[in-house]
Image 1 (tube, rainbow, N blue to C red):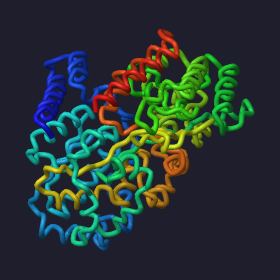
Image 2 (image 1 turned 180 degrees about the vertical axis):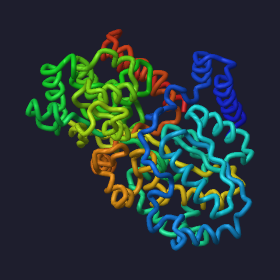
Image 3 (image 1 turned 90 degrees about the horizontal axis):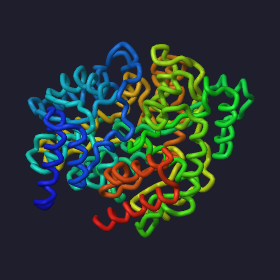
Image 4 (image 1 turned 90 degrees about the vertical axis):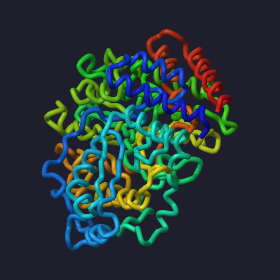
Length: 506
């Protein structure tokens, strides 16, 4: 890292912290971040959950299984107790986003990992912009103040060089957590969220995935089949609108102008019509005919949405569905449990999950650039990485294995209220299957989520500077399109020009 890059990261960190201390306004912060050409604050949320799904009550002990370190008879318990002889008194600092699975893992950690190992772990849960501030400051200063950090998928291109390669650690028999089994992680998540240019960089942790969610009662009343294709999806949306609007609209989407949610919503229809952001030569293709068809389809859907969609992000669309104002939509699967919770839903037991409709045409990843992988189930998400500047790599690896082990990730998924699991074994676990019923914290959408990950996952480009480009330019231009300020042609032309500048400036 050169001195110019180091100073730029420090300015990013200082700018974000100045905003949180009240020294500068949000507008001033955004302007400075845009000037610095690093991450846009509006992009930092990915698909974050500001409000937690309803957790299962009972605390960390409620869901312990045979591989839980809380069970004194388990190999995991004995391993962590043995590790105490080597690591007791070690202090680890973890920085991560405040999300349901993170909070659940912290609760389990306090009752299980810390007492058994004697390792003092400080896990700081922050808004994602402050996670970024902490991480870029540490990677600039290289003080070793952070041992493990939460890395959003959009940051991989910029922070890859600041992470410890997990592969040599996986080969360490002396540090091997019992039953860890790295092959148990779902391969698409390893490839698209935890790797950069084919090289493993971190371990998957918290990965929301898009699925189709619909009202069973509305579909039965109108004798509608669950859509399997993009044309069928539009036909169902239109039929619901014509039968029930304005009480129930056809669909809902987060079309907030200039927001990352709008960019993410557009990817479904871009990819579904055979489009992509970049071609194999790493030049923009966002202004081709396939992209134009995708945007035209998206605008057609807009005719059947409730008023206000241009002010909504992911939470707005989910709330619209939860209050019964939309018949079907494609959105974050982690919101599904709230539809079975009487505290947050007026449609308890009526929501159903299904695979997103098949694409009209899907471009092969070999015809795209920067690891872009078109798919009808967009994903967000993050991984946990060990800082290259940590002075406690062995202890950090021990902790990271425990936190992403099968038992802990299963319990975090349940205690976090139905968050998306990341391993094969999570989906097979009896504790997960037992919650596949209408109830707060339901897992009855998990089979659809697993199918989406394994067969339909859509990944944004891993282009350095993508977070800034996707919001500061793309979401702004798309906002002008959805609010009727400019044409499809002008929108895509402007997006392509902005993408070209970023590619040239790499």
